[in-house]
Length: 463
Image (cartoon, rainbow, N blue to C red; front, side):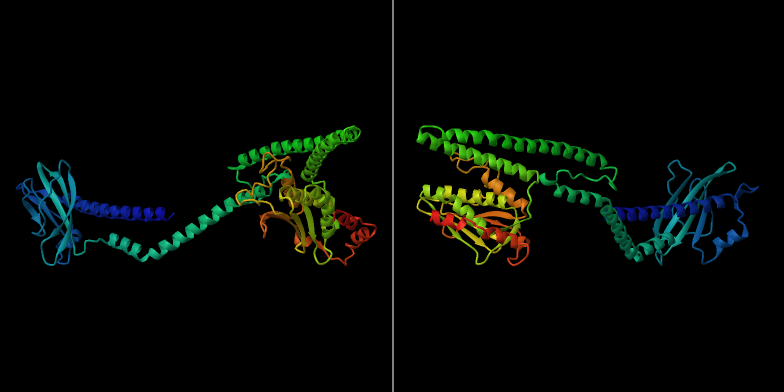
């Protein structure tokens, strides 16, 4: 816009200067033709000039800045009101020409002139008209330059106003695009049904919006099919695995039973994780259950205690100072915590312990004494089917399910270096999930825990 304004003003200046020169030359040429119209040949075959009184007075006063001369074909003066006219310029085949030059006289003058060639009878004459100027700038040029110099502040004001209006127009025109961008950022697997509105959308981008909505329709359809397949496959596999587990128990070889039981348990756990993933994808899990985070951690630690002992490892539990009730889903939280503790048991060395620590953030830390996880691999550990050790057992679903569960709970899961070496995984629930222990909402959970909860007995047996 600034370049356009500067170019526009430059064009205006050049155009005005050209118009000023053209008007001046045209005025001088009109004067020359007017004088030529009053030239006559006398009976003695001499050139005579009979100007009307007003015109004669304009050229004869001492203050007049106009002078003229009538010359013959050889350039000799025939009639003149001044002897100081410049030489006759070359016409180069034309019948008129404008010119200008600086006169060598005191005071210095700049002269603008015009020559007109015409026929009077059988004789060719040249009418030369000149105007003296003590200033090289004409009135029109002076006015123009005055306007440009004194109007600079108007030029900048106009430029700023013009840019402001353009910015407002662009901002208003792009407002629908910003709204569409905000909608696009909010679209994910959990709300794949959202579509872009076509209301108040510029018609230039309407085809793009319609195409994006069509793409989202196809993606949502594919996502629904995938979710449906995962849920059906996981559900259908549970019954054959249950039958297989029962049949394994009827075998005669205890060693074979133990090996097959481990394989069946691993398959059952993978199927359960797939079913949980499908439930999370379909948002069919209720997160309004009130549970005690300390008791959840103790229950999972007690259930996994025998696995740790069989691997010559232990699990230690640090509860928070007081009961810590949170609003979430107990089954999903147990699944997330169980995956973290099993992962820690797998990677901590023999003769070491896995620490499960409950804090009032509310959060649960799971700390092992293993090799830890390098910083470049930490973003990958929560990807589905990613395994750091390709030779290890497992499908690579555990940590990805933990992340999916915590995302559904509006919480987070993170990994860092443990203070004494190893890895520290932390699941953290949102602060507003905490329920005061003395509130009416926490009362049912307290009552349930007080009616024969075997968690402490399990911990005692594991110890």
